[in-house]
Image 1 (cartoon, rainbow, N blue to C red):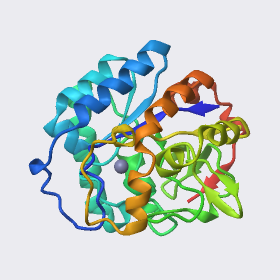
Image 2: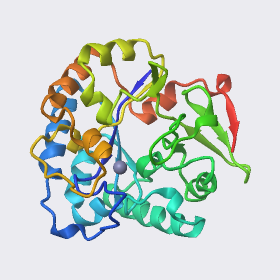
Image 3: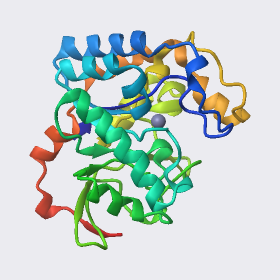
Image 4: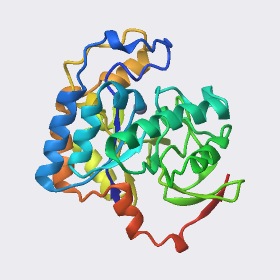
Length: 280
Ligand SMILES: [Zn+2]
């Protein structure tokens, strides 16, 4: 099962270091970025899940409306693109609720899927899942089942969809990110820096070996002309800007070589009775 997802934010929205949320001053590149993705998906009649930032919904509503008009599944990627564990439960709820409402007002439907910025739901802030269920989300895609710069949930076990059994009795369907063990290290290859860094032949091989594949792309992954965020630490800079020139043609090959589903389509094909139940 191969799942296609995107995190919809512009090049300046992903800076967890400087604390600069004064984003109006930056050059807007998201319109161009989203158009070329939508065109590629439309050519192949493929549907994805797009986790959209509430801030983008507020400032650039046409981006969200356009994604929706192509029949894709709209999810929520927070309002402010702040790491979930930097909030308390109340702050997390208000950020998430604000974004969910903005998105729902634009698409006229309930937004039922969530992904935290930087995969930042960890073993220490599992209260976030209860907040998500209180807000009416059915799906979460925030778990990174290994160590990660900003998040990580190493105790999650095998990277596969599970039912999260919450303390308040509710259940969330979890679609985590997946990875491959490469030279003793867990690597995510189906999106972000490593998708851009590794040759396509390896990406293809690892994807074929993965019974469950969760991709995650951004418009900036395919934009070699974007300005650089100078405040990022060196390693993060490398991960953010490596391989930008060739990434879009890799993405096109990926779409040609694999069949992809969005979260709702994947859910309808799952036999949840056979899946693990994870208590959080
Ligand atoms: Zn993000």
